Amino acid sequence: MDELLSLLGPELTRQSTNYRAAIKPKQRLAVALRYLASGDSLVSLAFSYRLGCTTVTNSVHLVCAAIEKMKMERFLPRPTEDTWKEHHHCQYFNYKKTFSIVLMALVDADYRLRVIQVGDFGRTSDGGTYAGSDLGKGMDTKTLNVPTSTSLPGAAHLGEMPFFMTRMVVENAFGILASRWRIFHRRINLLPKNVDTLVVAGCILHNFLLAPSENQRFLDEEEQQGRHMAPMRNMGGNRPSRDACNVREAFCTFFNSPEGSVTWQDRMV
Image (tube, rainbow, N blue to C red; front, side):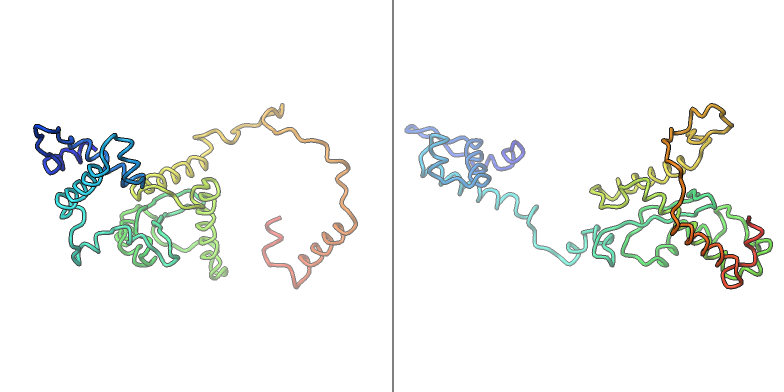
């Protein structure tokens, strides 16, 4: 209100006469703002401020006219073509009809995020985002210290299996990240720059929980007393039902038959 008063004060000032004192600009502005904010009648406002109904009516009109004159060009200018393009948040609008940013990462075999890039616009295609990102450029210029391409020992007969397994590891890494930090399962009501910081923090915590030497989530030596084991109650005889035994035997027979067995299964036992 003080800022408005400093701008509108000269337009609301009236000269006092010998018959009556002029209404102060601050009171005129208060009456007009109260009328606009509350929707009360002019008669009710006149009673509340102990002013005449005509005075209240003139004050409201005077303030509104002053606002239109003093602030029109700044807060309600005629739009230009460039004005419509100044809404930068549209760049985050994606094909799912929502707003999103992109998280890209290089993942190792232990589900850790080794290199991340956060903040690209959600409306851009995956290929376009990767090609224009620092991560993609780093991969192309080989500046991310990624090992050079080489054949895996004994992988010649596996065909495309290594690609499927690699993709599964990457998808599982993002799944672990989202499952541990449920904030990534819903919309985040923050500014884009704050969302970027939140995502980076989530990735760091993800790696922290996957590093037992850093957070002591796992025991690094044998402990005989069982103090670190959760207590377990007696589950009874643990004897399976006849139907369960039949299902187990059926699976056993199938996986040891020529139709259900694979060549490498005996080496994995």
